[in-house]
Image 1 (tube, rainbow, N blue to C red):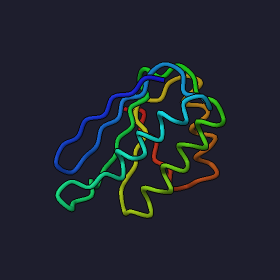
Image 2 (cartoon, one colour):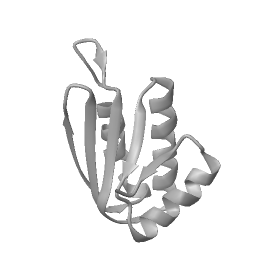
Image 3 (spheres, rainbow, N blue to C red):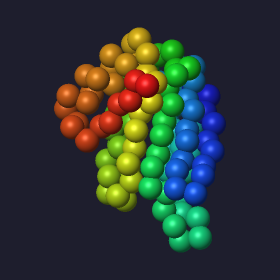
Amino acid sequence: MQYAIRSSYDDIYIDISGEFTFNDSDDFGKVLRAMRHERDGYMKRNIFINFEHLERIDASAISMLMIANDSAKRRHQMLTFRHPKGQVNQQLRIAAQYNSSMIISVR
């Protein structure tokens, strides 16, 4: 998994590419810390994770994303998964059936 993080005043943008698997748990921990980061005492409201260039995801990665979603909800942040394709889209949609607060945008 490769990732890049950038932010604006209210938003955090995270691009994830390659393959996202159990082996990426340490790197995804860094992503989670970025989601929780406060700047000048201000928590970002919106988090967008872009999967446009993510080729594959496994069950462990889905679990990590569900944890991220729950964590964002507790902090009153909106987490949106954007541009999933193929197997990634299929796996996210299955997970969303069991977690109604997951927002998936295919725009």
